[in-house]
Length: 184
Image (cartoon, rainbow, N blue to C red; front, side, top):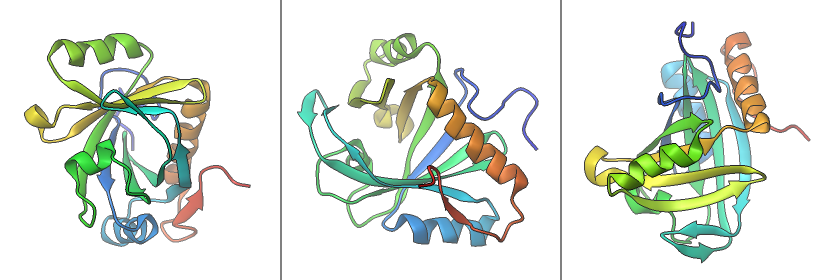
């Protein structure tokens, strides 16, 4: 049951996602399903992030996969980095290790939310775009022990978040615990 004040994909300052770095995204998703009953996980394999900025420098070829499930008003995101490129993921969770990485804020006031963190002296670890949707990772690890991801509200992203939430709501706990977010 979702809290009355929060719906999946709702924009605002609330933390709508908790994300973990894993070595094998599918194995980790199945472990989450078995241990917690949370699911299903929606998989986006081998995302190619080109022309993003890592700590101010242009980087190409970041290759990673994600699996996302909904649990009440919060998403659980699992991230597997496939390449050895420098990234915000490796800044806090070294290769070969697994652990908590970031919380996410989904906002319709992207510039103001990012500026709020910058004004506090936090560095932008990564910034980029998927289509028209902007995102960044703010390195709040010195104060919070983790990164903060800021994602700009986008019609396509809201539709994906809604699909994930509906999948969780309608799931029988067994069938297709890992599914493609964007079916072929």
